[in-house]
Structures are given as structure tokens and as C-alpha cells.
Length: 308
Image (cartoon, rainbow, N blue to C red; front, side, top):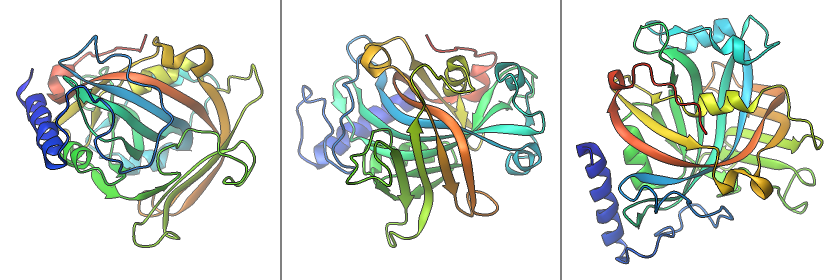
């Protein structure tokens, strides 16, 4: 086990000890910081017992933004690779695919020791030439909005993004069909991230509806597989290699991805000005993952896993 992964492992043990839960057999969340989830259990824990594993149950959307805006938001020293154009036929040449994830990390564990679930909104700028080699693709993550999970907050901070603690509505289901009594529209998928001090101070607000059966939306599944498997960096010193699996039972049959369409509003300062993006497309998606933490970014040169 790499030294930094050991650090995470022992931090999980310490966190478990603080709250008085010592059973290695109890793989449920140790404390409930983000509500009750209906997500499926981690299917990879027994296969990869010495790795961090879990599931990401999420709403993931592609937000076309002007390429000029992307160039302003991504540090100048990093080039943007153009290979996304081949993955997105018909995508406007003057636009860039910002990818926003509203997600629940669920049943996260290593060696049977679990961490509490946590909800987050992650801003991804994919296809970044971090290493300057012209072909290795990375995701730049300048900001992560996250629920109050001390282990997750400490873990992600080492990658260098701005970490914003928030409350979420719903607390733990940014992917679920909301009951009509709780949703702005029957059957909608919605999530809001807001200031813990002022529920009216919303950082991100989103509402989506599923597309008609058989309509997969404008972006192929292969694009989402590619983007979600690009290594993530914030400050460029270390990278997160989260390997998303698209071939487990939680991503098939009753849990198969669902194409969605809707609106998402992102407030300043996460963009230069508060902006509502309408008629954006994405997926309601659940995937299992194996995670390799705090790797040298240079060690991921040429990494090209596309999901399975």
C-alpha cells in the first residue's frame, strides 16, 4: 500500500475510533453527516480489499461554455487538448465541455473500514495537458463544494482545490427522482448546494428531467467514461486516480444510466458571474470505483483507461 494511502487508511481508523465504532464488519457509514442514501452497496470491496473502493451515484452534466471563458478559468500554463472534439460530434468548435458532477460518494472503504458518505458538486475541466506532452489527458478541479465530512475534506484538500463546505438539498440523493411533494416538478432530479449559514445563498442549483425512453442525448456514453476516468488535479503536485467501472451490476439493467436534460445555475465566484445554463444534457449514473490517492502526476503519463 503506498505511503499516502496508508495515511488515508490510518486516518479512517482514527476517525472510526473517535466515534466509537470499531467493527471491521460494519461497512456502512460510520456517522450520518449527509442524510440517508438509497445507493447500492460497493460491489468491489471484496475484490480490492487493500484499495480504497466505493460508489459514485450522481448526476453528471456537460455544460458548453465559450472556449475563451475556459481559457480564462484554466491556468495559462496548461494547454487544452483538442481530442474532445472527436468524441463530441457536432459540438460547437468555439465551445468547451465543462463537466459538472452532483454526486454522492457511498460505501467508501478500505480493508473493511468505512468512511461516512458525503455529497459534493465537482467542477471538472477535462482534457488538460498537465504534463505538456501533447497527449496525456487530465481533469483540472479548481473547486469542490462538499458536505461536512472531515475525512473527505482533509483528503481532497491535499490536491489543492478550493474546498467549500455546504449544505445540500436533498442531503444525499443528488441523482434520485424526487417525490412530487418535494420537487419543483413531478419526477424531477434536482440538487442545490447552499451556504451553511444562509439557505437562500445557493452556490449551485440544478433541476433535470429524464429524456424519453430510447433517447440517449447528444453525448455518447464513451465520452462520460473517458472524462470520469481522467486523473484529477488541483495544484498539479499530486493527482487522484479514481478508476470508474461501468461494468458492475450497479451500472446495468435496473440501474443503467438514464439520459437527462435540464438547467443548472452556478453562482459567482465559481464562474466570473452567476450564470444559468439551460437545456444542458447529462446522465443519471451510478458507478463503482477503485481509487489510488496522491500519486505523482508524472507517473500517470499516457494513462488512458476508458472505463469498462
